[in-house]
Amino acid sequence: MSLSLRSFVWFLAGSLAIVSTGCNSVPGSWHRQAALRNRELYQQNMAANQAIATSEQQNADLRKRLELANERLSNLNNERTQLNQRYISLRDQLEKMQNPLSQSTSQKFADLAKRFPGFNFDPETGVSKFSSDLLFDSGSSNIKPNGAKLLAEFAAIMNEGDAQRLNILVAGHTDDKPIKKSSTAQKHPTNWHLSTNRANEVLVSLQKSGVKPSRMSSSGYGEFQPLVPNSSDQNRSQNRRVEIFVVAPEASIAGWDPKGTSTR
Image (cartoon, rainbow, N blue to C red; front, side):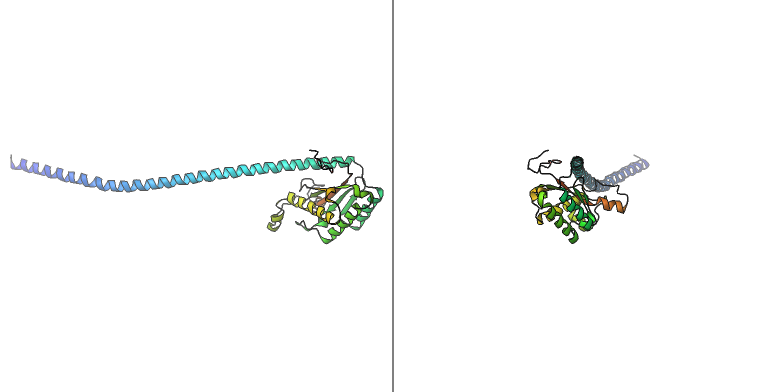
């Protein structure tokens, strides 16, 4: 073999060795970097999957809460419808009824109305209306002293003569302004609560003045049975009221039976 051919063979062998060495070293470094990158991607993928799972759980919880809220809203709407129907039935029946009070008792209530502005008595039906502003401070169900005096005199009339045989239905009403103060909302979350609590306070006040609990019942209608549109402060003051319906002992009104048997 000639020197030049031998030199070429040695050069080719050396080149192959260098290339072989390079090929063996570069992939090793690349594999390490690829392994690190794959690990990072795996961890990122796991974190993303965890975030997706958490998000799906949160969405499921929100959907469940929404379903419960919709169910509560549906129940409240059903209750409101029932209350509205009860009130309309009560109003319609009382409009057809004559005043069960005697003339002398009606005159006592008419005289009482003259002495207490904000208290109105209808001699045709025997229905009494108390302005809530007369009985309560704004957002409160605590009866004011002057209101307590009026109710005491009302109870005294109901405990005299032929009025002692008559029964009482108390209905609370509010205007359309929502409950805003947190201190008020803790006691009365909605106008329904406020109207019902006020009606109950009137019952308690009448009971303290001697009216038997068995003669009385109460309801709260919130803002949903206004006398006039809630378009002004003056109109709203008319809608904030407590109504007392005086009915004969044999009367069965709007699902309430004074004898203790349900009419529903």
